[in-house]
Length: 180
Image 1: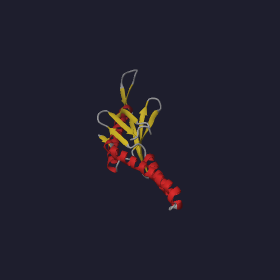
Image 2: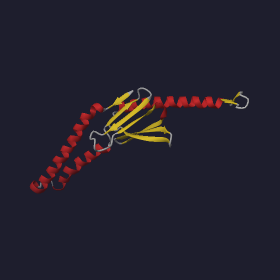
Image 3: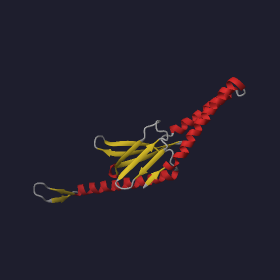
Image 4: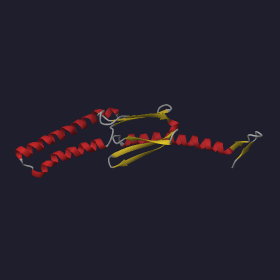
């Protein structure tokens, strides 16, 4: 399954540019009010504070572009920001059988995907992706795909463990016996 919100990059660019323009106009209006018109008094600080808070919320939500591909035997995750110099883009690729579990955490308007992958050195590694800009349907599709892979991996692991526990071969005489 492929999932991508790359086609919404132009919307996120527009929104980012609009927020920056609102902030610039807010600063200009604040300065004009402070030194020339003096009509708003203390409310003039809202001309700066509101756009800055909106801009901070936009960037705290994380990387805007998320791409996922589970076609074939490899999982691909890509997560990048529309403004390249703000955050380093993430790109991870690993075999499906290494996926142990995943978790989607939603707090207010911020959503994160935590993927646990088996590794040789530490036993497991947690990879973090920002999925705040995915809609509910895209998040549900992502969960469905990852659930399928985790279930398949768990079934394979259970079958292997079941086979290992059932039959043991005596190395000395070559006979096999069943363990219960």
